[in-house]
Image 1 (spheres, rainbow, N blue to C red):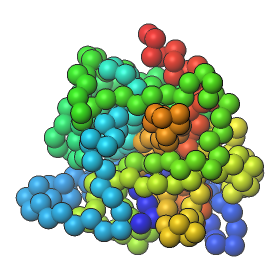
Image 2: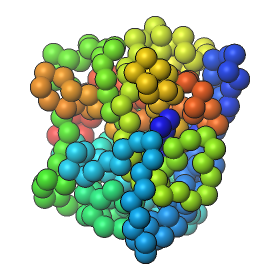
Image 3: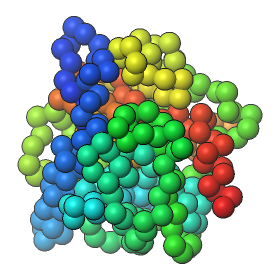
Image 4: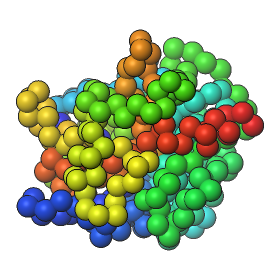
Length: 304
């Protein structure tokens, strides 16, 4: 399995080159290019699945609610009326974190999020709460949504925790400088499992994949100048030594979680941000917003 759907589009680069800043321009029009077609595709597949529940998972693992009860889906209604989608992570009974470009890209602005908790489906089941209280980072600029790509979601009412709905821990103060290089982490999202996949697939449900966190110098070198900042984190795209070739996020997982186990507990270390569209199986690194770089921002909103 190569992918989850990363909800961010990055233009294709050749196998001989690393992706550059021009290869991430598609994030500026994420909702029209990725999110709207993605949401329509997932809705159609879920309707088909619920009519004929044939459980055919190939090359990856379906993400059971009980394994990742902090994972949330976002059904996004744009101000234009279009419907799109993203992922998010539950941090408390009334707060979640997601990618900033899920709320606004250079072209489209969200009007509201429908937060979906406790369901592997995006359009059916689970606890569903509508909110328009979303706060992007103060330095987030929708004209360049790759930078400071993080936002906090406020729920109008508190959710009740259960085996299917519960928050994930944040890194502790002692871990704030940890780069997590070499750690095995889990990314979760919705969608396609290869570059070639188009239309409907019985794998169009929330899925998970194990990836390895890269050292920051390698992260920076894996992309061209101007893409990777100190507040980004990368995971390797090629795990051939572990017989997991070309794994990572792909083109519809934006805003979803990257977690790892540290000191006996599962913690959130990244928010899915970008990858190389059309080259998900080429082995390019996947990009995330590094949670430890935004703990002050996140904690501030958790305390309000």
